[in-house]
Length: 75
Image 1 (cartoon, helix red, strand yellow):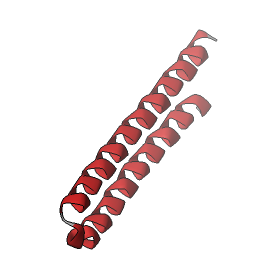
Image 2: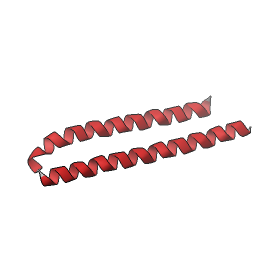
Image 3: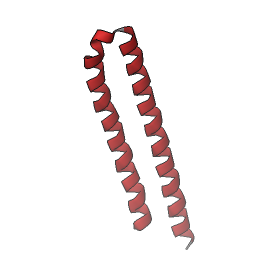
Image 4: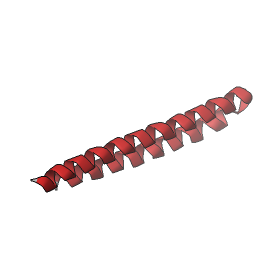
């Protein structure tokens, strides 16, 4: 029973850390993109697309890690 409780605790901590890291990463990307667009508005199209791609990749990694945490609990 203790092993199961530790698995739940580890999965909860892992999911929380992944969510926190993804939020920080996406926030930094968006902030830097807004900085770049504010300094050079004509380049907004060239900045916006890579920003969306990078945010999607970060979200994908966060989702993948959350699934791994759930699989640890369900095992």
